[in-house]
Image (cartoon, rainbow, N blue to C red):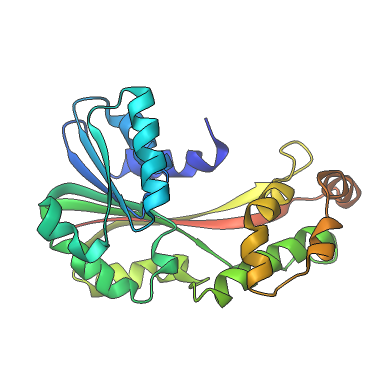
Length: 247
């Protein structure tokens, strides 16, 4: 299983989402979370993914066709239009989507109109809490981590949305069932994925003018591994926050 899905899978399993439910995945992108939910629930459930990125939705549709996922569908759609276009759902899920929205509280209110009475909302978000605390032992790791968070912030993303989830859902009138947080730790044994993340985010980092191409080219997986061996310590890569609530 993809390591980044471990926290997500357990959150979904504990939230009470069961086979037979109709589930909406908001900000689904290319469908990674939708397909994870489909694996958990099986073919007796309907999974609907929506995103405003038409290219990513097309990719998700192609993957669904290749895998023969007849009950997992994807649509290019704004979250505000979901209720009128798609009807109601037993559960609404999302991962790292609220942090990029200009008004996450309004989005949650819009989503509540899509939720059946007693239905569940489950969100996972990241938070910059703890970033930079190990700069003395991990200067290169920390530099990349700071580039990433600074880029998200310059894109108007909320880098502390994780710790705000409880307040947002409570304010929206939902019944909080559980809120949890877990540090994503990296060690010599796990290795570091920051070189990969840097490559994935390179275009965004350059556009945000957070780092130059030359600065990023100086980073290599070998350099990160060497730093990890020298530190002989644990690096806090990220902080996951998860919450589930009912209507």
